[in-house]
Length: 214
Image: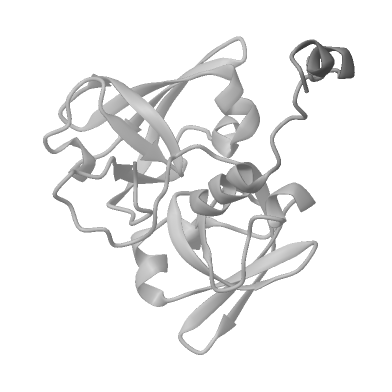
């Protein structure tokens, strides 16, 4: 589990493509502290497993499904990515519950400064927007943010200077794809509230009831 509080901005050192999958090698420093092989690191909001660790880098496999469902497939050597280690059991919960499982990709439609903040307007499909709630939480490229506005075509977030300085947001331009993960709580609540599948046809018939004296 992650919190959406970015620890470090890393750089893609290399990408090895094999069919529809890939191996990413990422230059990093802070997220390598106390990290072991097999540990989870979120890369632009995508939970990946560290399969190789060096003094200033780690490598991770990216399967075809992850390439299809996220923007990792658009990365190239030199790309800047947001990094966060999985939350420690005794860690501070600074953001919100983030699984690292991307729901969909969004597209940056507009970037507009306002005083000390910057507004980002991001379009997404209706299925994804269904789970985005005004004043609720959204994860954009691994960053825990508060939704300021949402309609049936897009949503908006307002970014403070500190968030921009600590993430890869300044590198993003209109038209760029970003990874979106909706608040996991809403998805589970909706699933649990859905009616169960219709029960199979009952074996209790009129003849059955007569047979047993009803």
